[in-house]
Length: 165
Image 1: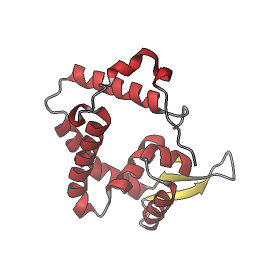
Image 2: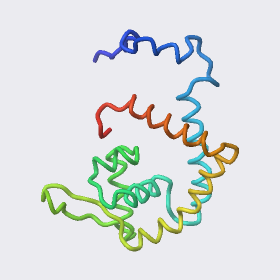
Image 3: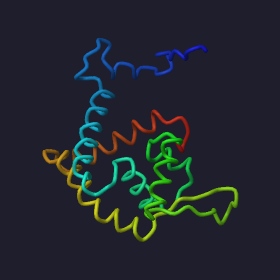
């Protein structure tokens, strides 16, 4: 199997944005990963008594926004591998937090949606998730946050392989 080696020439003049000399504390992917790991760890501690995992919470959150989704969409938006996601959705179905149903537009596609109980679970957990997010941004002014969100959207656009992923 051959490995794809990227060519910096493909990036044009934009390679200067990432320092040539490696410094861990200034490497954006490392910092983003550390932040997400810490947020997830804090959320996991807070959810311990609610009998729900961070991964299960992500499924509920995506379905709250999208109302229903097929497994491919859920994989992309939850960032969970399909085999793991299938087991998570099975657990959520078993606990009556989500339901599976056939897509009315395409009988070959199964969709997943929140149930009333899933909506209630989301409503109970959202203040906890919101607290951890607010805590992360407590010393950031609103304009900085808007700029940060816009920058993250640009980064997501840069790393996407398709419009969907």
